[in-house]
Image 1: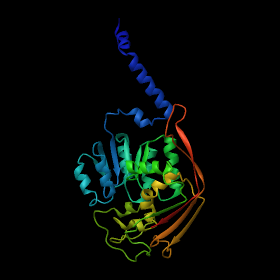
Image 2: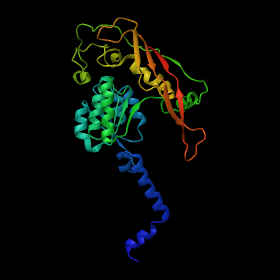
Image 3: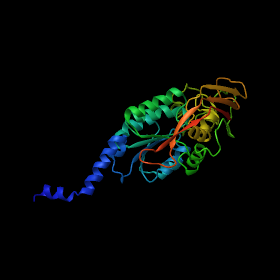
Image 4: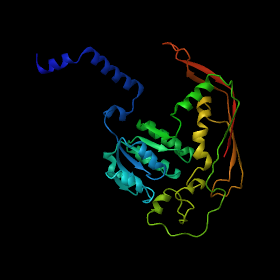
Length: 327
């Protein structure tokens, strides 16, 4: 028996079934290229765009992987992560990072202010990099659809950061609602303590010296240039400005409206009416708002309580819903 024959004989029936089953499953269910190509026991080389603030905690959550590149426009805000990851290359501009590190990174995290999410995520995805992007995914519906189509075309693994969505509590609550424990739902009321940053104001006049640690031009990114004002935009109050943030709705609704959307399969509304609590000025979001969403009746496919080989899902008919948002 030659070497090749001995090798074939050692490849037993169990190995054959396991290998072919995995191959068929990967083809049938479209397992992403990243998972098929990587050794599942190896570590990923991750680049982080946005290393201060929320980006810092995102990086900490991936500390078991290889953090190979960090990018941030504010040296002071990201100093802690630079110290924690001395072997990671540091950049001030995400374009330079992607240009130079393209072949050395497996995935990219985007944890910047909202106005940068779509352009940073799409730039990484264009290079076939799986992306984890903080919420809200984008500022506009167009940007969200663009990223969706790009991920589908490139067959990429992507995820929007949304604390709580993967937790047992939220999934259990979805199951309780869909089981009919509280009956049909016709109204939903969701509120938040946000904004906890200034809103309803005009742009301030004048300018202040730009801190040496901050690359203000890169921070502005795709928005129209404006003078730097200390404490007005960076590092936190950008959420209240139309050019940079998405207000309380973009900051918190992806958390608090997540449960009813998933439990009730709300989909697209047929009517939306917004009531601002202060005049709109074209610069910042109003002091607060009340928004009414109308959703039509729907049919939802839910996991069957008693599954069989031929019966794995039930169809649940759900009534029209009025959802109120206060924030």
